[in-house]
Image 1 (cartoon, each protein chain N blue to C red):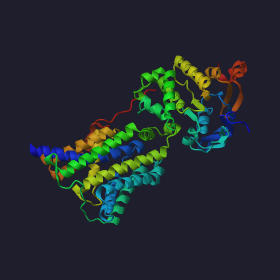
Image 2: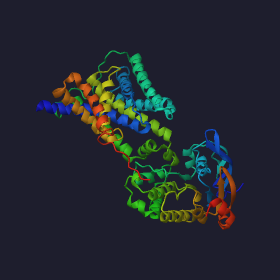
Image 3: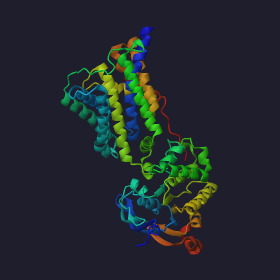
Image 4: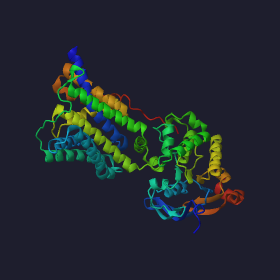
Length: 291
Length: 242
């Protein structure tokens, strides 16, 4: 029973990472109707920025943490303005091509600057015991709190601020948004910035567990994608819950069903399963409209 | 130079616009005076919607468009809105996924005066009590008439100087159309908002307008006081079909 509880709690901890990345995917999906395949590599790049700030600049952890978030936000905005904007009216395949290109660019640039050797990445929570004792490590507990805080902050931003309303409006209905004065282009760019910033947090929280290397996020992106699909790629809340669910399923499945070797396969099974049985996901809603 | 406030809310000179290579509008001169109600009448495909889109910078144009003496042709839609021109677009432009209240709040997006926005919010809910009853409902679930009321209310929350309306009667039951046109008249007389309404339903539009223009395949073929055009049987029969 203890082992089971441990698996569930640590599944929730990694699930928080998946939830954050899934939310980033959904945010981009809502404005572009494409899955940003490069979301994981962008997060990896951000994590390397944090690594550089910590190791080379010697900044204290939390300063480096928030600075990384700010830099990632700018990177996301710049990527949208330079690479994604011209694709707005391009055919599907061109857009997909750009996303894959973006993935390769970020992956190679990361490896080129920081080398491909695996590096340790510090956890701000050390190895003190967590309130859950042996069921959850201090880092797992701490990273769960951080991801939950990020998710809450994003929720409050979107639901209770004017800019959040404008962000949603711009993604849903760009034409009407312009007619009420929303600067749609900047809102879409800001959406990319936020997604990139959320990814940065996920990267910094998972790096102490999986270690830092340019391909660190590739598996995580798959789990996050599975989570987003499971919850519904049109539903931010669904994607977040889906991310947590996938974290727990992955851990339990790995421990009791398929073994650790085949864990990643479960992500693919979930992806194929959801697309076959319920393509809109558990919480994805078809928008009702009358004419 | 006339004083501010006496210059036209909208003045177009030789306005040409279209999609791609072809010009739908072939040189349009239309003027909306301060507090004026102008209607642009014409059949399907005459270029009415294109004209409103051209004013709002939604398509590229040639010729001159001014509001209150200021050139706006070539400006971005977002900036034109900030000059006080609100557009109720064809198809109503509802934010289907958002609530009625969020739709209304978006209408006031560019405004900073919170008290004024609250005042206008109360005013439009007084015009259209039905929206108040559905304030937390997803806007996509509203009926066509309610969405039209929402679109007009959203535009009014800008506290515009000029309101552009694209076929507000389209697809609505006669009773609701009457309600909406009554409110339009009140908006004009009570708040002094200038109105440019594009309509297929000439009879309705002529009843509230002071000036009318007749648009036929991209050209103005006739213009004058709405009352005169309404009385002119020849025009009515040949152009307006009633």
